[in-house]
Amino acid sequence: MRRYAIIATRYPKEVRTDGTTTVGNLYCFLTRAGWEVKFVENADSMFEVYDTTVKTLDLKAEDQVILCHDDIEVINSVEMFNRILSAHLEKSDTGFVGVAGSAVITHEAAWFKCAQKYQSGCGVVYHGKDVETMYPSGYGPHTKAVVMDGVFLASTGRVLNTINLKMPKDFVGKWDWYDAIYTFQAYKKKLNNIVAPIILRHESGGRYPKEWHEDLPKFVDLFSDHIPAVVK
Image (cartoon, rainbow, N blue to C red; front, side):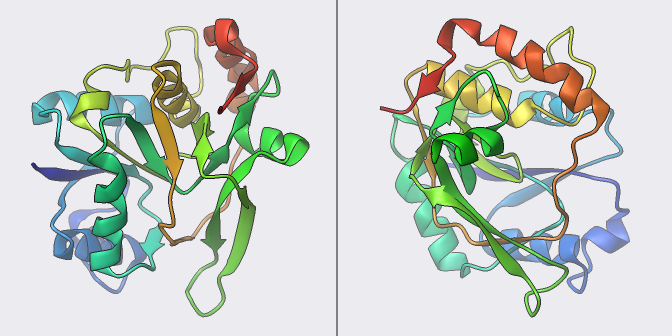
């Protein structure tokens, strides 16, 4: 079993391997934990980052893969981090493991809006520029989700080799909706999307440009046969 982490970044190598930076600290943590880090620099879209890199890895079913942002810090110990991920990823009925999401998705589509409206939220993420001043954003107590946030996702070759990682042709936003599209596909396959106690500090907040809003109804159309969706 191999372990990879695929991370889109705009930082040069000297920054992303410097343990005093957030991205460098993440690289050092994942390397210590036994994950081979694949930085993809200056890509055209998040879909391209994941689709292209996954294809180059020739993944076996049991291989584990992290898809995450470059501005996060893992607070768990290395041992606990791997233990939590393996506990879920070694199960054949797991789709993705993440840190936040919603157990209900309706025509509002955005997981965080559904989480608030239907009290269907899952997980917690800490936000802030450092661990001394970070604060928790709690989304709810549920542990299984229809859709999860892309700040941190983990899956296996078993899943990634069988879902479509490409950007839908009619979408205009290149950096959004990939997380919802990937995790909803796993939900459609009757796989469990697990929100696990991976504790993260996320340095930045959410960004929702006009392209995100433009693609929202397209996401609903893409999964219209399965929306509303509820974890049972």
